[in-house]
Image 1 (cartoon, one colour):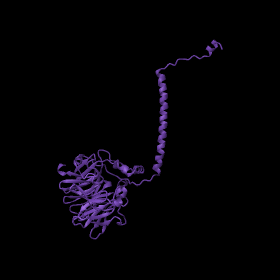
Image 2: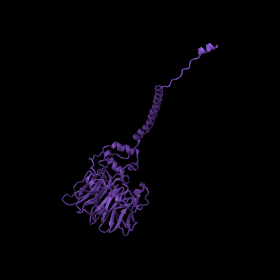
Image 3: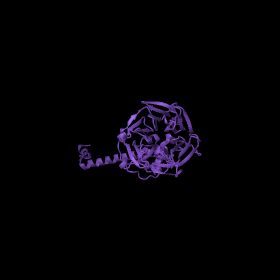
Image 4: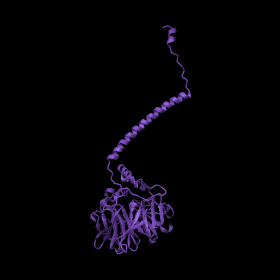
Amino acid sequence: MNEAEGLRQRRPVRAQVITEDSQAQEAKQGSTYSSRVFQMTFMMLAVSLTIPLLGAITLLNCPIDPQPLSFKEPPFLLGVLLPNVKLQQAEKLFENQLIGPESIANIGDVLFTGTADGRIVKLENGEVITVARLGKGPCKTREDEPACGRPLGIRVGPNSTLFVADAYQGIFEVDPSTGRVKHLLSSQIPIEGKKMSFVNDLTITQDGRKIYFTDSSSKWQRRDYLLLVMEGTDDGRLLEYDTITREVKVLMEGLRFPNGVQLSPAEDFVLVAETTMARIRRFYVSGLMKGGADMFVENMPGFPDNIRPSSSGGYWVAMSTVRHNPGFSMMDFLSEKPWIKRLIFKLLSPETVSKFVPRYSLVLELGDNGAYQRSLHDPSGLVAAYVSEVHEQDGHLYLGSFKSPFLCKLNLDLL
């Protein structure tokens, strides 16, 4: 091949002219490719997660059979209910020496409470002294509760003995001076064909003859209280126990998580906190309306726990959870959506779900007619946390809690 033929066979190499349009075209092609890769990766990831999730939702059992509930719009937190930080003035007592001091009673200046490990303790001179143990210890986990017992309601009788409602064991009378324990009513005894799985609170007449108490459910135990609330079970009862005849009567049934109880000063009616329904019912035990029932307070700004008398002639009510308005109330949102509740409890344990409950503490003082007199708040829920009861004594409020490792004390003159 000569030089001329070689030149004819060579192709001229054209210089590549780089323009903004060509750069944009390359970038567009690269972007389109990256976008497709991202879309495919995302779709594969979504499918890989969705299929097992759908399978789990279909195959996993749900521990509850939630019932649809209907609530009115919560009352606005205005006026008497206007949020404040008054509970944050509380002084913590016996910190890390108590676990879950749910209920409080006093004999003179000495306070008594029950703890989560099944003990009745005396709080005197800065010390926590064990008076009696209702079950078998030690109690370290929720699985131990039935054997250890869980004292929830405590009242002082006419002979300065303590009457105690234990969630698992039933009703006891404890002599705080000797530690003697008398089992008045075992929860193992069915009442009108139904067992008592969750004995909650009690109130007693001045002569000590009658005890009115709540059994929150014949299905769920105390350690499963969140399942009871979320299911909306209506198998709770208000009962009467006669300490002389030892007879038990069912006064009210079909209640949704009946909780705290309080006898009126005239002993003509008993108030019952129906926690799941955010209301307080009234049952007449004497007088012309004996045997009748009506509504004392309904559509409350939270879910009531224990009820105790106030020095003004009204009642202190501890709210276990607040229904924010303005704001968002998870319980109200879920009330008419059983399918969401089923989904939640198929995927999450009750312990995990409880972590999402806002730690907002609220205490209400009601008048003798049920009207709101004042409200005490701790929006942070860090000082007066998980308040379950308010016990008034000598110008101070003592705040019990079903979970905190301390009691709280408030000076009423500063509120």
